[in-house]
Amino acid sequence: MDDKTVFQERLEKHYDELKWLYCELYPGREDLFHELCKRLERRASERASELKKLDQKRISDPDWYRRNDLVGMMLYVDAFAGNLKGVKKKLDYLEECGVNYIHLMPLLDSPKVRNDGGYAVSDFTMVKDGLGTMEDLAALTGECHRRGISVCLDFVMNHTSDEHEWALRARNGEKEYQDRYFFYDSYDIPGQFEKTCPQVFPTTAPGNFTWLEDIRKFVMTTFYPYQWDLNYRNPAVFADMTDYLLNLTNKGIDIIRIDAVPYIWKELGTNCRNLPQVHNIVRMLRMICEIVCPGVLLLGEVVMEPEKVVPYFGTVDKPECHMLYNVTTMATTWHTVAVKDVSLLKRQMDIVSKLPREYVFLNYLRCHDDIGWGLEYGWLKQKGMDEVAHKKYLNDYFTGNYPGSDSRGELYNDDPRLGDARLCGTTASLCGIEAAEERKDEEALKRSVDCDLMLHGYMLAQSGIPMLYSGDEIGQLNDYTYRDNPRKAADSRYLHRGAFHWKDAALRKKPGTVQNRLFSGIGKMEELRKTYKVFLNAAAVWTLETYDPSVLCLVRELEGERFIGLFNFSPWGKTAWIDEPGMYHDLISDEMLEARGVLMPPYGVRWMFKVD
Ligand code: GLC
Image 1 (spheres, rainbow, N blue to C red):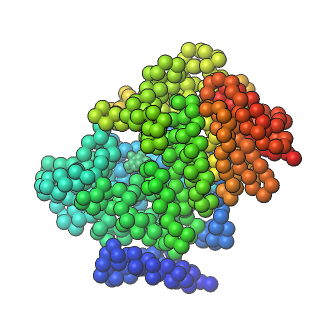
Image 2: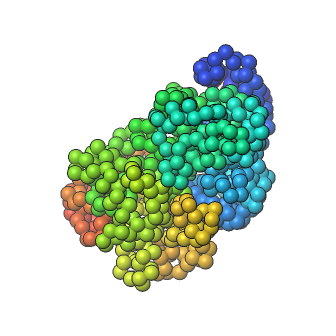
């Protein structure tokens, strides 16, 4: 079949629904819909033959991302290896980490100074100066594909930077470009929006609008003042942004992380989050990818409560995102570290494991952003924990301001009015490794490394795709140099975005070092995860009561394989009072044992596989 026919067939499959949704957003604009289809055809015809082969392979194996063999890592190109060519040279290291999915943090052209770590894009068709070129990106994805590594990139679709060509032309008075954003002459409408629209960065960027003195207009800026919200009510915005997305997938990007997607549609009188039109757009993007680049996956960045997250999977007939972040589990995991009581985490696991197996979650401990305390407060309240007081406790605990805590985090967007601060820091520093090393306290160091390993063991035992944060595999600590950098000082998220320490990474081979313990411990669990099919998404998963508040028990079962994971979230020796028949082999400690009254060392983790 020639390319044209392939395209036509794929288009036909989705044509009616796509047109329907398009005309729902842009009534009466069939003319523009036909133009859009032509642009899709152009992008489809440009797609390189290697990528088309990959598309075919994935079409014939649609579960390729639902198995147990993917391990992801997110990294900043400059912090990790200087530039894109540097990353290409370091692929051996990533493979040694067991990683076959890399999320490259934003690398497109963005302002030198005010750029929100690359999340303010000035040109979607260019790589940022200093990181390389679009050709370097294509060369990197090509080499990754040869090695069986998939590449994920952010698509920052809610806004552009104020240095983007559209923004410059808008500022220059061109109405056509002002219409791509939300411009207002007076505060009347912005004021109405502010009544119902919460703030994302209440301290570092208060309000949802920015006054542009030079042209005497307000512009909507949900995030930072230099990130101008795009107006998707304008069909030109949708068409051009879609085209930019397809340009990236044609450079070999396999996974598109649609950044801040809940925010892309604004409506007066609403909170401007998760509106039905957002789902309409995501569904259209999904169909567009299936038409032009069917091997590509959509990863939604939906950092919201579970009821808001799950709808982004869409339905079986009308899927939206392929994958979403398991954000509530992440936040609940850290809550559990602080309270040493697994009941909320157990409840969260029970909720997640009842969701359809087709859903794929990305599990993670840390990422480039802060930890927001999105917990189930209604339930905690029944246990006597008040939301504001509990957030304060968590923040005190993780900033080391609570007796007995060795955590070294920093607050983020501390808004004293709301008591709603979030938290920054690397996994290792939050687990206490930094404080223990400073005190040269060997006992505390062992304990904090054990805690770090236990958390990774827990993350890796979940269904979905484990996503490591670069540096965590060697226990990298907080980087305080951001405080001396005026471009970064106001944003404590840079605390955990430091340069990768290759010297420390070399210690992964030296027995007895923190790096060696973490690198080999995490690596071993990744290997087991890839080996046993009980870690497939299709496995049944449930929790067991351990009758110890600090010990979580997870059971996985598939086709005769049975796994029991035990996780001690406390610094004390414990017993998991489970009572399951049969003998088990704990492949972490290499002990044979019965699954009854299992002894758990402080911060212990056991991965027990049934042997008879
Ligand atoms: C996402 C990113 C975050 C960024 C924001 C604005 O939430 O993860 O880092 O600040 O979008 O683009």
